[in-house]
Image (cartoon, one colour):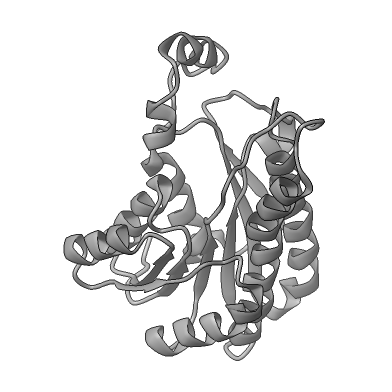
Length: 243
């Protein structure tokens, strides 16, 4: 799997899975621009991976996304792969969920992904090839208590990605999703142990996944080995959801 000098943009790089994505693509020799909102964590990535470039950006600033993509393109001197990994959750039961809570999650998880793809594809069309990898979630397939907004945003990404794949397949641009299950991150580390045991009991493989499980899949989808795969969702969940 040769990703040497591939120009890759990763959003949400300051999060748990994001850091694993950066490490995997750095190991494979890619040129990386890592974006996130947490400046300290981005500085930490710079210290750990000296070759990468970082750029702080808030994806809720929709009017600035085109300029952001242009800046990433200039910094990388091109754009081969976009990994839309950034996302937020603001949980509440549906009847208690405010419109602002709904809108924040949809704006960042779904609308920003649409805009990142829209402006990224404009760059990719110049070379008549490119890869877009959108990170969704098992919750987008199953739903989840207190996460109607999050589930809707992740399900929306899946349908959107299929449509995008249809529109640009003949242009050499592949669009796929990765749907992680429950992955070991700072967030899952804080889950109550009793609840974690119940959660793991529902996973056929018997454990939570690692960020590397997701990054391995992303590396495959970013490589030339996946050129005939588009419009698909690959589930990385230990068998918890089998479609």
